[in-house]
Amino acid sequence: MQRSLNNELRSSMVRGGSMMDNEIAEEALECVMSYVNDPRDRSVVSQVCKQWYRIDALTRKHVTVAFCYTIRPADLTRRFKRLESLKLKGKPRAYMFNLISEDWGAYARPWITEISSSCLCLKSLHLRRMVVKDDDLTMLV
Image (cartoon, rainbow, N blue to C red; front, side, top):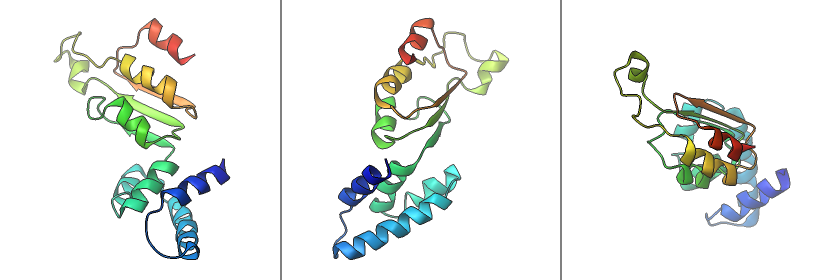
């Protein structure tokens, strides 16, 4: 797994320079990323440059989607191929106070369909305030 990650990181580098420069930068970047665990810090780090964005995508293991309509499931799984845990939040909190109708949305099916085929490393899935049906659960098994 580590060797394939290193190969993927190496092949994703587009910066010029000798192979030695790229290897040193890659090793240093891997060390730095192992210390950046807070999701907000990871988001900021991934904005430093294109290389850091790619490294973040390859090394991030946990993602929280605060509102399930802010990103398409396919876009999330295309960027983060090695997710181990995913937390999805559906309906806004207003739903808990009956300020949003029962049939408002937040269906888990599109997410579960994408996750079941793309997230092979996924160990944990947390669905909050989402509509989950029995058929959806059978896709995960």
